[in-house]
Image (cartoon, rainbow, N blue to C red; front, side):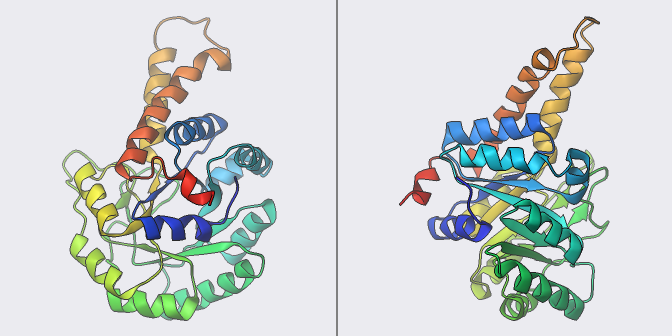
Length: 290
């Protein structure tokens, strides 16, 4: 069941759970995410970064739309970290039902101006808009990127930003980073900032870079009111670690995709199921069928 991001996240906010947004950058990862969400009866957002879309090609979106329309679980197709108006418009033309415009690196007023333009165009055709205020960190080799030092979201600025742009959801910076943290770095969420933002912002809030933060902190953020959490690195690491095991087992005759990939898909599915339960989105699909 293909729905918009607003339809999906408004329900999550009302019922106090977080929708998983899985960056499934291949057909195999899409299968893992769909299988996990169908088993757990969880809604989910299929998040695709522009660089992933470039690799997958535009035709991949037809596959995602087909999968969504032939499933009872609610699915939104989400452009992750759209960097320009043109990228966002291209995604909408392909059939994305949710888009993110990320102008968080720009000065506040410029971020507002770019976001307003996207909101006007996207809302005209029923597509939801996410934007970002503050900056998400970057731990290394990820398509999402980020900055070396996080600039935390200012609650007062968040209130003004939401009111002036009319966005449907807001990605906030409270100490997460894209990718997996080095062993000598211990991530810590600024849940105190989250509490302040929740007091003044009444739209769904989004957490990017949630792969390697401790489960306890992620669980607390959901309890406080986070409505969507992006997961990319964790499901890809599960997939590629299993792939390495298979390809390095000494059997040089292994070549068929239907032999190589099923166990990799299963490992990613296990990771996705763990996140779904952590986010409390399991058994929430029926909330969208009323």
